[in-house]
Length: 228
Image 1 (cartoon, helix red, strand yellow):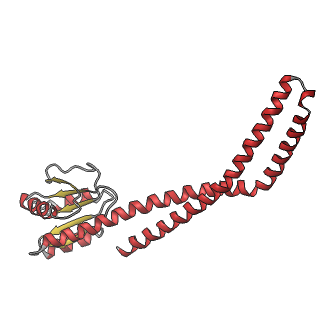
Image 2 (cartoon, helix red, strand yellow):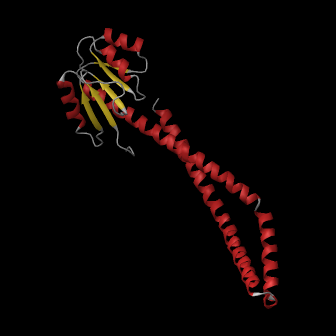
């Protein structure tokens, strides 16, 4: 199950290829968005796709089409008609997944396409997990600094609270504005104490989130490697 919608561009000059492939794909439980176009409307960098499938082109258009689609970062599946085209694609376009046409070509293309989309989805999830891990790491570093300083902060806080409470015992000796200021100092010191208590809870939550993110990254890396 992919966690986002995939988009496939199907490039074919012969409508029969488009009809047969799309009809077969309709029977799948997970159908990506599909944009079908001929080589007459193909434009460099048009749209954002997760996969390109090339099949049924007019004579001598394959090389120019491959040049256009290879400019994108998405995988490319190319259905060729004979061994000569296969050699040409492999020699000049090693990143393209070339497949020679045979009676069961639709099943083969569909199987390969689904595996490509899974890999694209896993790669995207891996990037998100890595970004989350980096953000979690930065937060953890800040949390560690606060926790390392907690002893000094608590000592300073105890001093402020203690002196404020001693002064408040003899509050009547102070004018009204001074008593209000003392009361404010005492209340703010108590508030800082509550914040320090919360720091301990946040540190524990950050450690759990960091461990979870690292586990997800390792699982996705392993899954992506298994598709190579």
